[in-house]
Length: 504
Image 1 (cartoon, rainbow, N blue to C red):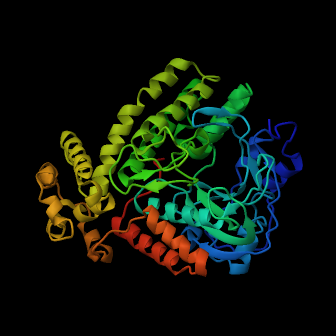
Image 2: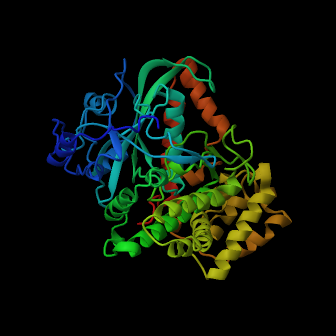
Image 3: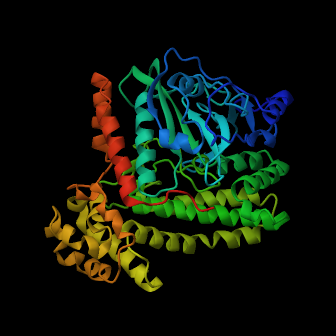
């Protein structure tokens, strides 16, 4: 089983993590290390060493995210030491840990997964919320789970993930944040892009990397005691409101919390026009926060059959099938939990997904339109009218321009009807939406004073633009378009004012 064997976390490593492993770095007062994953014990990860990269050129440093975890005071050299050479942070994990998991990939079970080109580097608390966050990597070198691959990440892949995470956060989707991108100076061979191509290592800041596949591994190995350990760990660290529950009630409570968070996540994807592309069970976690963006796409137009991955030949993970895919994955998690709980209450919890998703979708649509929620029936009618309008607009409308033009409802009507899509909005197919939106008042109308709304077009992130940004980097090492795009996304994030945190 690809390295399963007798690999264990050495007792001294676990003990070192509990004692604290200090490296002299000038962290800010907001830095609160809390390496909880170590306490799970030896069956959940393998200690690994990061690759020794020939270069360490910082290409992206998320200073806003760093401020929330007290790492904003690091110099560039200290940043390289932490996020290119992965020297231990103060009082944190003394060594990176490649996490063990299994998973369904396009619904075929694979017991040979695990962190094959990444690891958990550190855990720490977020200022203000106290949430436990992970610093985890992508492209940091080979692990016992690399399955013959090189454990590296292309620079293009890193650029794409930085852009995806920024845009999703701006649109209010619960997402990990790209924390650091460092170019590493190696030439990589790939089948799906011109090679040799440049290499990078990405670090993301996320609210848990405990995947559905983490539970699946222990169910596959028939280790019910480890599933029970995972339940307790998940409740205590990520769903603390469930802490008073015990036994089967705690298991069912966790299942319910993951269902609710997952419903919120997929609803936000749908209103963001986002297609994840690879909704395997190892790409979903227990906090309802999305992460690991490979062949994603943002919709060029409303198309339920739109797929992001060229290898998704049956459309399993098409835009319109994402709720179904998430529900199927939740069923696999419930099957794992049935080893420590009766099936009936887990099935009952699963039966609540559809209603939770519908409710979350309506709320997400109202939030994207920037209006104060009305009566439930009216909200449903408005959300349905909005989706019909998006379908009617097709390629002429695209996706983001609709929300940009009508943000705040009637407060933006004059702007919408004087803009580049005015003739489209005057058509009969938009009459129902326009009539219904007049019943709503803008939510926080001061947001419309943001300079982003004075621009003729919204901040989109379509495939051709990403390719153009990369072309300038690949051909001339010109990072100006990348940096300019991130600046515009940040402006849009401030303008929309949407929360991107997963519900507690």
